Image (cartoon, rainbow, N blue to C red; front, side, top):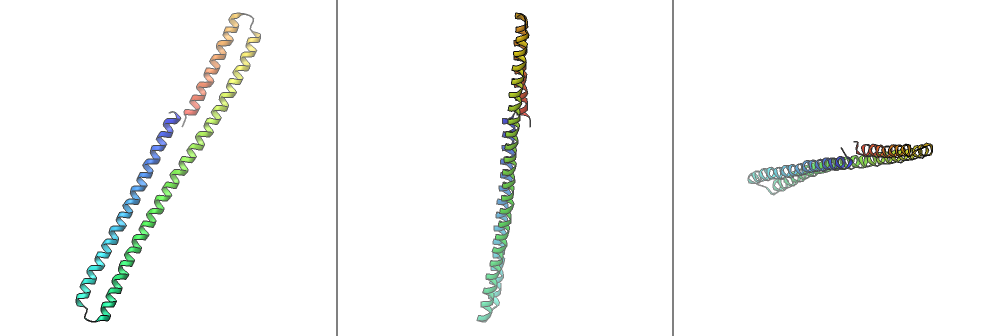
Length: 167
């Protein structure tokens, strides 16, 4: 598998992870809003029933106060759920970014090692070629030295391509 394909697959995985994290967060936000709405609805129902039974002003004030407190608590629960969902989403995003940066660093290190190995192999091939050419006494020996040099360079380049395309 070549490096571009590997990076493409990693990018797809990151995108899917982000999409899943986003979906979980959105679902949590929706559930929190529904729970809050339902709690408010229940508080309103209780309030309506209680106000039908209340006869004095003080009791009505207490019912109003209780209703407001119930709504306030429902909103606090909603906000806590949203905050937790946001934390989970952020942690997921941060992990995806960290994984991405690690994979980029690893790829750069692998490329640098492969490049260095290629340069060293070419250098060695050139040295061997020069020595073989000096020692060659006829045209055929020089042709063989040329052929061996080209093969050594070709093999070094092949090794380089394989090194950079490894996972």
